[in-house]
Amino acid sequence: MNDEFAKKAEAPSDHESPMAWSGRFASGPVDGLMSFSRSVAVDGRLWSVDIEGSRAHVGALEKAGVVSPDEASSLRDALTQVAEEFTTSQFDFLDADEDIHMAIERRLTEIVGDLGRKIHAGRSRNDQVALDLRLYLLREARELAVAVLGLGETLVDRAAETGSSLLPGYTHLQRAQPVLVAHHLLAHVWPLIRDVGRLRDATSRAEISPLGAGALAGTSIPIDPEFAAAELGMSGQFDNSMDAVADRDFVAEYLFAMALIQVHLSRLAEEIVIWATDEFNFVSLSDEWSTGSSMMPQKKNPDVAELVRGRTGRVVGNLVNLLVVLKGLPLAYNRDLQEDKEPVFDSISVVKESAIALTGLMATLEFNFAPMEQAAAAGYSAATDLAEELVMAGVPFREAHRLVGELVFKLEQEQRGLEAVTRDELSELHPALSSIDENRLRPSSVAAARVTPGGTAPAAVENQMSKAQGAIADMYRWAQGPPASDAQ
Ligand code: ARG
Image 1 (tube, rainbow, N blue to C red):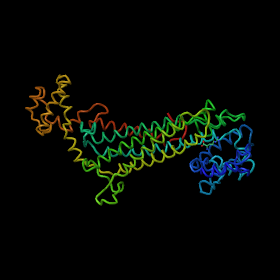
Image 2 (cartoon, helix red, strand yellow; image 1 turned 120 degrees about the horizontal axis):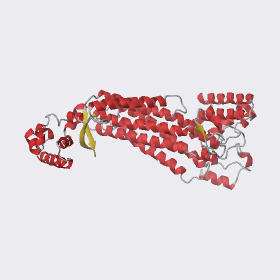
Image 3 (cartoon, rainbow, N blue to C red; image 1 turned 90 degrees about the vertical axis):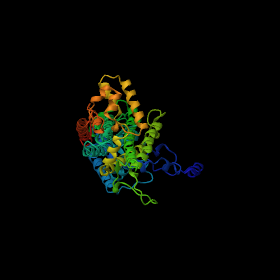
Image 4 (cartoon, rainbow, N blue to C red; image 1 turned 45 degrees about the horizontal axis):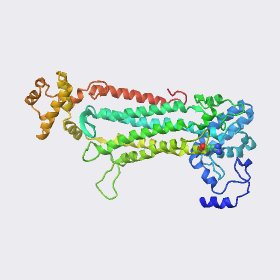
């Protein structure tokens, strides 16, 4: 491309440019410039929202008397035809189509003749593209929410199957205290519910129509921004036309929401990778959702989880990409903003596919309860409970902590577990322990003792599970409900 630029710069062409903006140019662009600037390969997917936005704009032009009702209806028919051409893959892009907006306007004009040349009155591609991207993301956010909720629902269903089975809860990846398997799974559900909440919140701010902002300063044609917003089912209009065309907060917000979703998926994926090792053996992956090794015949690998984890770099990178594009941009529109689309489109597909793949993985894996329960019983995981028994008998916690710590130290030297401690040893540790229930230090009792709301006792988990189901149902109502203006 550099060579082409160089050649052209030496011998500028004087052919008539096919570009819509060629009026003030003595020559067309150098060879290669168009392919450098062209964005249809990326923004082509905005065709349907672009047509939707144009319909609203035609309505506003009709109301302003710029086009007659007959002309408006011819333009609407032509827009329908263009939409059909896209749906049936009949739409042909030409080399001169700089972006999706110009391609559609060019085709519209081919269909209705000169009337097509009226549609851009009072509008710039600057407000047009900002509108298109908003409409597109509003729609995609809901679809993405459904995929994320599908994973949340699957985790709740799997949690419900596990009853009061236990596994060790970890801190520092060291066994800490036994928890219900259901409690652990539900701990991955709440972040997903908050993630969908973030998509919904971002949606409430994205529902603003920039139509009427023109290139940056508004338009002298009396089109009513509120009318266009209402036509599009968007909740509001802009307050400042320069902000309307320069603002990409909504893209950044969705990119952040998606980056955090992917981080949450990645944390779950990481646990599955660990749980599926022979060392842990907490889960067995289904054949349908695992892959083999080209060399080692015995291998069954958690590639799905690893790909989810690995693609997180891309999704976080996409957020950083946009923030760097925005940093230092003077008001109002700058062509840099064309670079907002690739990262956001990429994040949408990675996050959606990751959520769907993890749903398949989680729905089909098998829990290996025996190794989980065994691990839950090991590692002195009842030590805190022993200390808390002392606290309830009036011993200051620090003192209780020291006493139990010393007991663990001794048991470790003797290679004995806490379950092997005799009642005599306990009474020796502190007289208050002479009457301790003999089952008190069993993992199931340890878990059952955590009855506070949000704790891991079976009844508390049961309660938590129905709260999670309610929250997921609420979020589904938003994601699958009417598209606009109901975000809060
Ligand atoms: N394709 C551009 C974008 O995505 C919109 C075109 C605006 N071009 C211009 N010269 N003002 O941002």
